[in-house]
Image 1: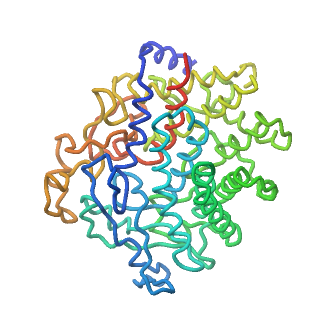
Image 2: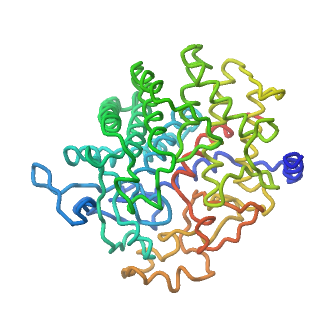
Length: 496
């Protein structure tokens, strides 16, 4: 009965029309604001500057806690410049960055033909990450670099990425201190990206796939969680709470799609990972892997993958609000609500899976049942559209949770570069703590607009205070944006 009340209240908000094409463009533009490294001449968010150019010059050996210089055989310093800052800080965490890249690649694969002029920008966003991952995979033998920047030191500062003066410690996993989760996700990202570039840059695509195979082999051969190996460099920021088995599952699923090598299916079947969670995120990949592999059953009629189709549909039944099997809560305004912190990450990730599965269903006019509820492609599509529309402004606060979209959007997001004057406005450097006063603890709007950024979102009562200090609701993240790119392209090209 409670679910019905929520839906009635949601429908009463109206049926506003949104410019999905504009939102799609902005959702991809956001990634330029998160770039680390030397920015290209065609950088569009001009308030950002070069940063982290010396990343990789220091390697923090966390096992002896001593600082060492790692050099290649040619006696050159390791170059780990590039990649993305995950959210509002200045750290490069490869675990969420790889998930971001996998999702951006998947959405580009599924909806690239619908993206129009944004396709080239999506490819550029993917390549900015994969170029960095290639460095991480090849910088030193028997090491996979998985992060740059001491997160504990960084989170004590409020400074622009261009001014970073905190230690840029470099973290890696190795045979003796494994990280199957982060390695599995990096392999997934490289494999998925290889498919994006297969027809437009086959040489680069082959390089990505070769490295995906190598990194995944490392993940499988040396099993263990990177949370255990890296300690405070991973936790509590991006602990692998679900363990590493789901990343092996996910990585194998992507390599199966990229190579058609049936040995990856055999590996998946030996993992004994039959979990059907009711969420999907940078940490828990099971639902994504099930939807990805269901394609061969739904679209390809390959009965070897029927079990994955069933698990994908079980997941949908746990999400839909009028399903008898639902285990998902909703706000009174109709927003899917999983956890108090950064809830929109779950909304965009789950919505991405739903639109993709609906797309698969549409090719064969496939339907299925959640108990007595008949689920069609339209059932899922309409639900997903309500979630996207909520984010864009069809909500009780009439606020767009995408920065720069519409006229009413968050102005005080928890983001260092956005909240501090740019180099053009303030050429002098800000020290570690100099940004707190007056730029962090102020009610003034951020001086730089991080166009396209989707923030953590409202609370369980559909309320958003727009306070910079409220990071769990006001901080953007790359993985929130990466997941919504597909649904935006889907609804831009769909006629309703």
